[in-house]
Image (cartoon, rainbow over all chains, first blue to last red; front, side):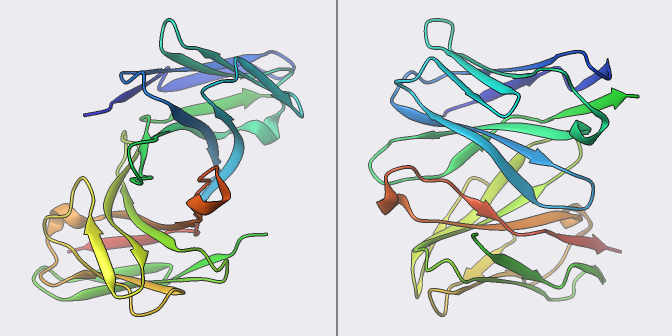
Length: 114
Length: 114
């Protein structure tokens, strides 16, 4: 079945530095890609979504890159601040005849050090 | 803003007991999902539903039942709770008819089985 591998599992960066999280997926079919943020004790908050025909998307200090050749999805937080400290998940939804289930990566615990 | 609520927010249950987790959405979405989250893992799909009075098995349905009595409500039932079912459970809803199937998550229910 479809799989998503996410790395690194833990990431610490000084405030103002960038943070990069990468997900590798297995299936090349048409898909939607998502990045979610989970703060302690809270549910998942959608950060950004991209369709498979998009290579790059930027919103509010976040950049998502989709490398279809290498089957990689990345999230780049530019100039990270302490409020960005959270767990980040990538997720993929493959367009397989109406089954809209998400396959999640394992998560990355991001710590931004003041 | 999408609204998905879950109850209870936390629960302690005894092994062999019955547990019911409830989810309510006011988004008028057709699809609803139940996921579990374990440390070191992303979210894994237990059951989902795309219409009232119908449920489908996800990736890890064993030991769980689901009930969708109305479009707004989706319950997860553990008939005989086991230690291995200690986890955080998330409910989500989505509307694939909008083209991009973004899932909106509830705040989660932390279940401890003793």
